[in-house]
Length: 227
Image 1 (cartoon, rainbow, N blue to C red):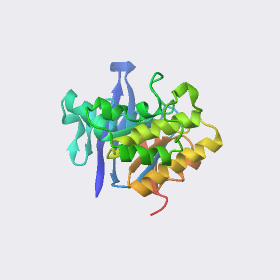
Image 2 (tube, helix red, strand yellow):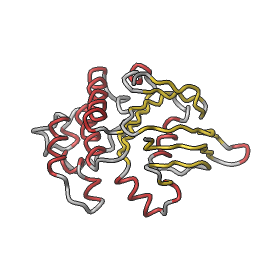
Image 3 (cartoon, one colour):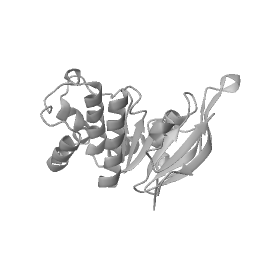
């Protein structure tokens, strides 16, 4: 069953001669529980695609369906709820709140949604992410790898339909990069979490089930790596 359907998605910045087509008529679907890597060089359009899927930006044309619901037919208020509940975003530079500790950063989406924290889920995530004993630490007291683990925990805390990771290892050394990719893979396998990871590194992409390559805003390759 497809959890995500992207149809004829186009994004143009600017107008007239200054217009830049960042994404050009992109279509694909993702099955529930699938692990997809989207690869491409800097400026290829892959991050633009991720932001459009996640409701962070709006397309010039085309549609994104998540669980059969058209994301961009929603009001701004509905879109905000969609981003909190249906999508877990992991950024390259973590985007943690510096004055909040590990637990507060991880549970921020739940707090913003006005819901109670699932204590059992929080406990499981702290253990799986290797953050036991650091619950009260601020981001400045953590290594880069630990901060990225907190960012992953925050993305998973609301049990979203899809986790979108934008260059999640781009700011890490080789050892931490491997550990972060393994954590994402474990979440995909053990929790059935649908994962879409943006990366410029094809070696990292080979850990996924499927690889989609983008160049100049268009899909140039879509291949299954494993079943």
